[in-house]
Length: 284
Image (tube, rainbow, N blue to C red):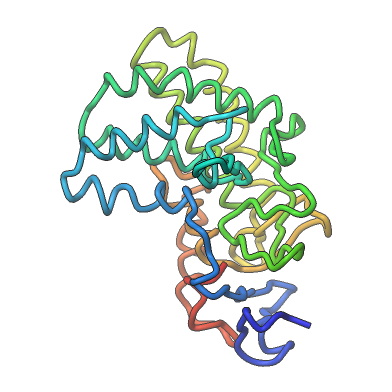
């Protein structure tokens, strides 16, 4: 039985919002807001709107440098340590979102001093992801894509959990994680190229090109006109259509999806589907 903290519109069948050809629109359950602790991924998402566009550049730089201080094994904490409580690092997306936040900060400020301070940490983060780090987060050497997942942990933004029940585990290669992964590689390539010789950037250039080719080949569902939500997961590939995850593949500084597919993704995402929750974008 689904706990009462979660709400889903329609019945069991209606809630799935089935599309033709096995393409599935999957409105997610949502957790009551007063039960959600702070998440540092939210800081990565909101930094531009709350700190940069409002001119709070000093505060934004301090936030980024503080986050870098707490990196452990190539991961930014999902929640900072408080008092005697240790930091919690169970997140696959906040660390990659850190690259996006740094990029937006540099766009607004041109603060190369902070970039110089952060660059060794940014390189360390990517190298840890390539080798593999905690919670099953590691690059698959077969295709260069990033996989994640560990029993009992919720590592993506869809992080609802009740007791030991992880509502949406999404173990495997998640679409938005790999969009962020590609973006991080391209950003690091550019920063290394601007700060030193091109030789330092070359390994990340080659890996980024490989990720780009693998992403389009492995995630795109031709008959549906959108991307798998997760591939190589517990049940092979998951065709659930979760709009925010799809959009990251085309909206970051370095989009990972081939431009020939962008219009199709946008058309599918913006068109209302039967059974879709009106609270979808607040879900997770």
